[in-house]
Length: 160
Image (cartoon, rainbow, N blue to C red; front, side):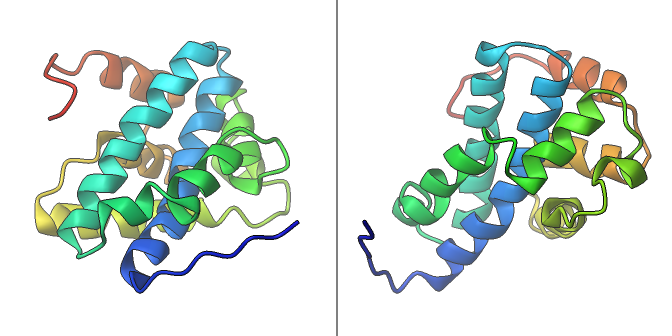
């Protein structure tokens, strides 16, 4: 069955649709490293907070990202091995080099990560998880170094 919903928040839909691919790569990396379901759930929640900050800064509405085109799509994309982006992250987490991890398939998030991070930096938006994905995909950092760096970040309130 198919049920349609409408919105006039084109920016929110576009940001959710593109950004969730980057987050799915991160979720795949966590799964590939065998860090557990709780770690993956925590990562998805924090990465979604990053995407919400980004969307707000660029005129997207938070309620759009909380809907099917944002969170709904993210839940599927960040948990299914059928997702090219999750599968790409899974391979990275299992030790594959970025150029080999896609297995001949297009993982859009690998390209989106660099653009997302560039736009975020231009607006002063902190997106450490997206930055980590961009660094791994570009070969500037290893999965191990990125995981250690993310876990070593200063503690702060969840809403920050």
